[in-house]
Image (cartoon, helix red, strand yellow):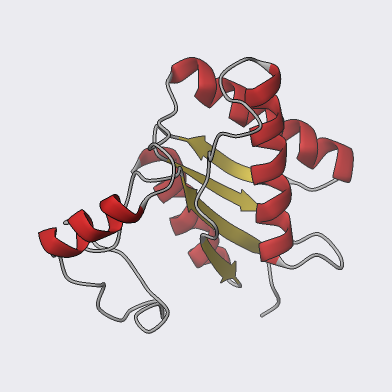
Length: 156
């Protein structure tokens, strides 16, 4: 079957550190279906101490700004958003794969537009670290996977 969509997820800065009890991935433990990095309060404390900026949490107004930015960016680029959910500490987007764009490039565009709109709305400055450096990029290649991913984004 061919590629149907990208499932993108990224967090706001400092809100989900390695060792968090909710689980995380790293360069070694990052393959779907493999165990997550185990919870470890010492690792969380170390990661928190290394942060160069304060954690960034999106309130409801900020979530609406980011959602609007992602939708506007997708519209301008003629990318089709299948599902979108902006939460207080992370964003889920399912987008039909745009021609000649990797999922990483699409995610970076969405993060950039979100940041610029937050700055414009007065919720951040050019010095604010809004997002983590990367995120999760998954390829959806079946209707069943797409259905499950949409259900997750919209209801989980």
